[in-house]
Amino acid sequence: MTPANLPESALDDLADLDLAHWTARYAESAAAARTALRPFVLVRVGGERFAVALDDLDEVACVTTGIALPHVNPLILGLANIRGELLPLLDTAAILDVAAGYRLGTANRTLVVRDRRGRRAGLPVDGVESVEELDPDLFQTMTRGESTDLVRRNGLAEHRGRALARLDLTPLRAGSFSHF
Image 1 (cartoon, rainbow, N blue to C red):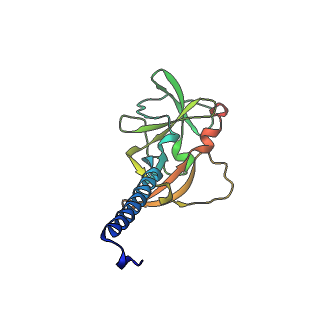
Image 2 (image 1 turned 120 degrees about the vertical axis):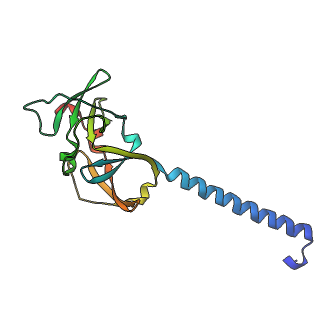
Image 3 (image 1 turned 60 degrees about the vertical axis):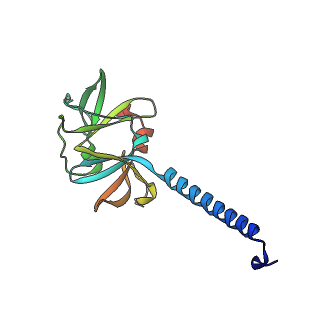
């Protein structure tokens, strides 16, 4: 039998089957698109914008004061007290090789990261723009060969008409803050 020779009820069944099939396919693709999105914290350091995966951070804290430490690693700005815990504050601008713009104060924020041994350190930033769900594939991969950087730019994207670099905190998190 050809479709033209099928009884009306059989054609309805075929139409329902086809509609159900395409509805299921659309639902699967929509679910896949939603699961591809990951939350990122968008921050500013100097004049640049960066995206940090939210699951790479312990918290985003407000650090208003700190204690400078003389004769330590130049990447250490000093120590800060966050709810009774002393954390080393790393010089985010020096690590990223951008002009420093942050000063500890109520307008600034600090990204708190935990190393593999559970020790925490802070990365001060000029400000937090937002927390957004972004597709990691949005970022064009940047390869720089082998790098010993604590924090790496590993992707670049256009976001809201401006450049946005993705930061990889894996080397910092995989290391140990005890060597600072």
